[in-house]
Image (cartoon, rainbow, N blue to C red; front, side, top):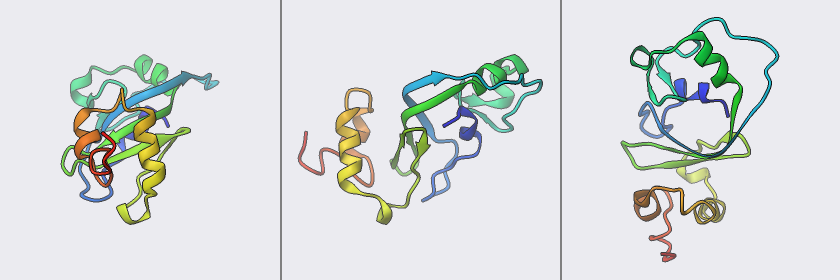
Length: 133
């Protein structure tokens, strides 16, 4: 997933924007061309800031576009839902389409990097509600 997507993604349940991003693993890739303008319109995912307050430049955007998030977590601060980023793909599914077994496995795998409030009270699944503390 590109950091650029943070300018576009909102919680599918309550439409809260921006989502909080926690990156577990990323890599740099060659993109073959240079960006000559600022790309994001509202929110800079790389800097975690509103674009007008982030002091962006085309050079910063060019560096950002070379970075790929492999695994991470998106968190909605309004409803406390979390969404995994797995193999570069953000999985923003509604609760009824999520797989509890897969989501809990993801939480266990990255438990040391996941905020405590998500491990204990995250929606739709948490380790505490499953008795895995």
